[in-house]
Image 1 (cartoon, helix red, strand yellow):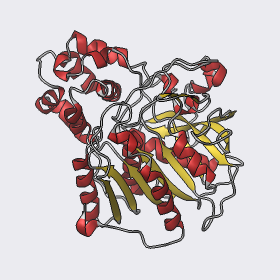
Image 2: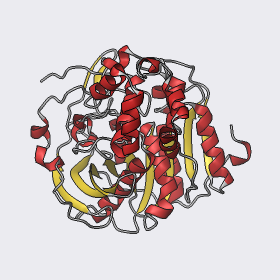
Image 3: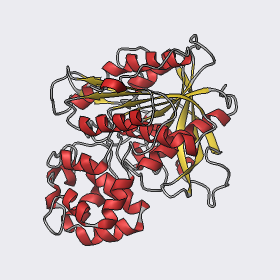
Length: 431
């Protein structure tokens, strides 16, 4: 069985290669009804499990033999949208086949994935059932987060990976929405702890972990955890290559056609979550801009589409202004974009941040500012800024390449937290 290649660099929140279409219909990979929430929802606190089913894993990590070393359970659980309303989110719990030999009880990693797109077929719980195919030098179709998942599971760490709000389920995915992503990550951990037979309990140590879009989700979860999920025994957060500020991100990347779909995904999510934004966009976008949003809503991270053909956001607006200027001019837009900025609240756990100084997608300056804000709040922050990777663009850009050096360091950092070693910090002299 073959799969059409659809691999692109959508650096906005994540790395990079994802299938344009599943090799099997979604109903065959995961019963289509599974992703349709009951109406009304059964109620219950955030993290309450709505339904589960066994799921198959057909992925292996590059360079490794066999499938992911874990048993997989697909879950639907209760979470909260950006306004605190009840919603249903899906995800996957991965029970490692390897024993945990580190200090203390087996930890649970609440894993926030990188950018997959906005179409329901892009949900990680569906992509995990895809067979990895690799044709040298660059033809790859796989759930790229499997590289990190495999290494975590090989250490004996349990993993729960959210699909985020609106991926797989009928809602619109709130791409780079600070609260929805953070809620989905924290509630996935709550659900995994409640999952019968999972071996987790309310005292299980939890780590928040993500890169790119997942880095923003992990950062948001670390900030909101003290108020939203204080009962979780969170021991630390790894925040890799995060998008910190949606507006800054758009301005920084405006004109780069490979990143343009991410702008549309941000606007689609905001229009779905904020009625005032939908009304503004109806007025401020021209026919091209509206068509781009519609075209992008059903896409994974694919190499072609209307957004890539109109990389300058000034081509999207009725006024001919770049999108960032429209945001600054319209109070309703400005307020909603400001609400997505990470770094305004204070985590209560140690944080390891990884960022490449030459990152061409998730810019370094706001990441450093976020770290400084957290340091000012008394957080033990270690900011590892990788300056060794030169500024690169394309499939193997700086943002993508920076994902790999931090894998071992971040996992060793988690093990040290479990061993109650003092958390390292370079707050006194940030890079």
